[in-house]
Image 1 (spheres, one colour):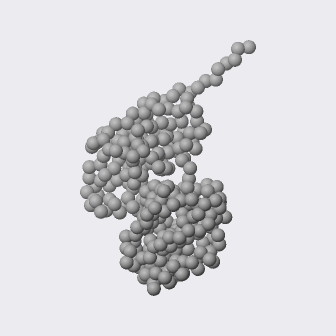
Image 2 (cartoon, helix red, strand yellow):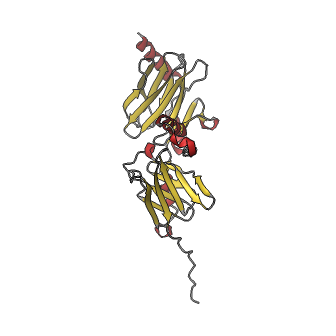
Image 3 (spheres, one colour):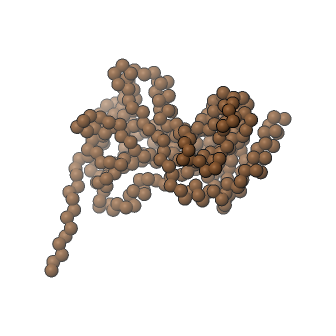
Length: 297
């Protein structure tokens, strides 16, 4: 009986919510907002012996994506997608929250950590050129928390669902899918303008699976490329070493590549607390500036 009422309510949501197919082109055409993905700084001194549970909490906190006002389109919130990121979904026992997938994307599997107090089901709606999957989420009570994993034919979504008693809830969340930032930057640089003269070596621990397979720059930005078998959740933070010391570097991540908006001479990828694995990246040479050829009179 409860499931029948839930499906009936879900049908009412689809009946009264405006068609989402018209907004698909806007989501795909817009420029995605920067991802809220920050690497956690390594522990120092006495904090170096943190428990593994704390290390996981720090990593999850760095990957967690929270809503801000700039991401709303009416009642829909549009996240920027990245593999390994955690996306928050705020729910309410009196309302149904919806998760909208990309047009033509097929849901292959869905799993929730707490299936006894959360109702999670799926339905489809018409898109501009292909059906769109909508995942319907409803908690049985307030003050609950669980995770939902959506596996599709294109990607995997990691969602953290929270229920609350207030009237605020996520009516719908969706994603903007950025193009490969590295590919966009490389379109403006010829192969001759790229510097591939980098050395990558392990300075502590065994050689990890996430060791870069290639590093190069165009004089303004640096790309660090990983193996295709490397999971985004396993990628380490990047530290740049300068004359003033070691500093945590910002970067953009997309799949298996970091794009750093600077050129460095020495940097390190570090992963682990007690005995971190360290992979050093060294820029061996600086390409000489090109001088224009003089034309003969």
